[in-house]
Image: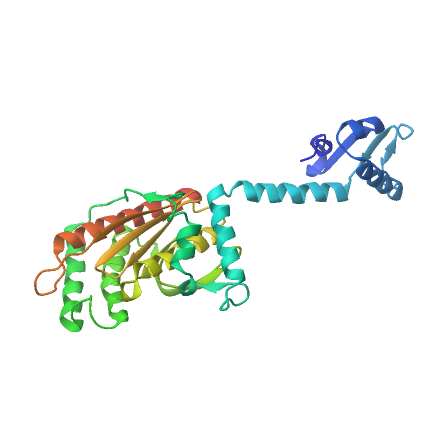
Length: 317
C-alpha cells in the first residue's frame, strides 16, 4: 500500500476518507501523475459536499481510482503472501507443462495425463527440495472393526481371487473394504464418494479420483495405482491434492492422499510448503489371504488420517 493511502482515516460506516494539504500530497508519496489525477477528480466532483474546504488548502475526497488501484494490488499481494516459494514453483512448472501439452482441454490436463517426471520436479521429489518422509498419525483400530475389514477381504478373496491378479477394478473392492470401515468408525459425518471429480482453477488440472473422502469441507484424495504403476499413481494423487488444496482456498492447511493397489500403500501429506510420504504394505498367507496384523497397521494409519482431518475440519468451522 502506498504512503498516500496509509493516511486514510476510517469515516462513517467504514467509508475511507483522507485529509491532505497540497504539499502533503507530494510528501505522502503521490507522484505527479497521481496528484494530477487527484486534482482532476476533485475538480470534476466539486459538487461533492465538503470536497474543497478552507480555500482549497485542505482536500476531503474519495479518490476512487487511486483506491481501486491500491486495493487491487493489496489483494494480489495478500493472495501471493499465502503461497510459499515451493507452491509458487509447483504451480509455475505445472502451468508451463500444460501450456504446451497436446491433450489439454480448456487450459487443463487430466490427472492421468500428468507425467511423473514433471510432477516429481514440480513437487521437489527429484531434488529433495520440498519433499520428504513423515510419521503418519495413527489410531488403533478396534477389534470388531478389524474383524469387519477382514471378513470383507476374505469374502472378496474367495469370490474374486488374489487382489494382485485380474482386472484393475477388482483392487478397488479390497481398498474400499479398508476405507469404508475406517470411515464409518471414525465418524458418521464422513462421506466417501466414488469416482469423484475435481476441477482446478489456477492449478491446470481436472479428473476423477477413485475415492474422495469428505469431512465437512475437507477432503482426502485416494487413487488406485493402476497396473501397480506407483509413479503414475503418485503423479495423479499429488496433482489431485493440489487441486483440493486450491479449491478449499488454503483453509485446509493439510491435504492427505493415498495411493494404493491394496498390496502397497503410500500415504501422501501435502502442505503449502512440501509434500511428504509414508509407506506400508499388506502381506499374505500362502493361499493369498491378507495377513491380519499387516492389515491392522494399514487401518491404524487410515483411521489416524481420518481422525486428524475430522479434528481440523471441526476447528475450522
